[in-house]
Length: 296
Image 1 (cartoon, rainbow, N blue to C red):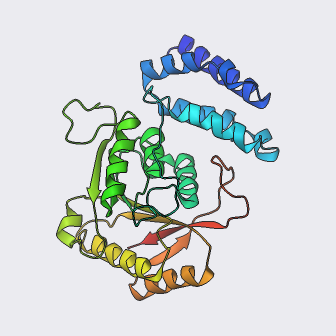
Image 2 (image 1 turned 30 degrees about the vertical axis):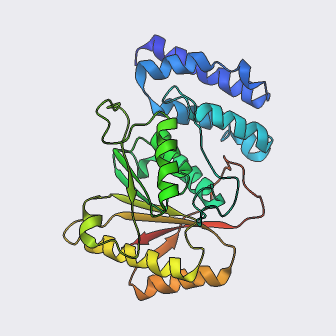
């Protein structure tokens, strides 16, 4: 980067920092200058630098701004890589059309935060998301972490319909689109029933990373999830197995215990990821959430 570009970037970062720390109105931020920078360089590092200067600034870590202010700021920031609005179509009902997948659950927000703080886990890699639901986690990863390819998956037809709509609403193209932006990840929305999918079907995805959020809602789902993880391990028999991250809200300790017990029976080792230093998205403060890193 030329010296004058370095200076311009530093001034832009300082402007974001001063305005955020002073809780200035969002319309006063230099959004147009940021968009121009991103059009010229397509540099997602700049967005991460802005996060460090704002919501992850030491002052904000010690004295966080209001949840509403941080949420509005992040909503504005995260839409800048594609230059279009980030819109998430969701159901207003927790259970709709026989599924819970039409709304965003708290662990999806928690996993999205972790991904933004750990982009190297996804950059230039193929990511398979199990039980994508409304798609917030995947959209955040596609926007902020620059994966090579991203596969959203679910089994319910209404969820898949909504997922495809949310992908398009956020300026991403589905893989079959010949007009797709080559700078964006290859995005696929796949129907995946954990109970019937085969090793051969999973092999076609060739994921480097597998993620899932808030899918431990009943014993049957847990058993099905562990089964599909075993098949994913089998389809990479002569290659390195994918990294797996499962995020969940600890609502019922017995459910979490069942998950770790089933992992042990399947010979899948696990360890808990450290908790976040900074909360980026709004969810209930009292909720206890965790992310397990699984070794297939």
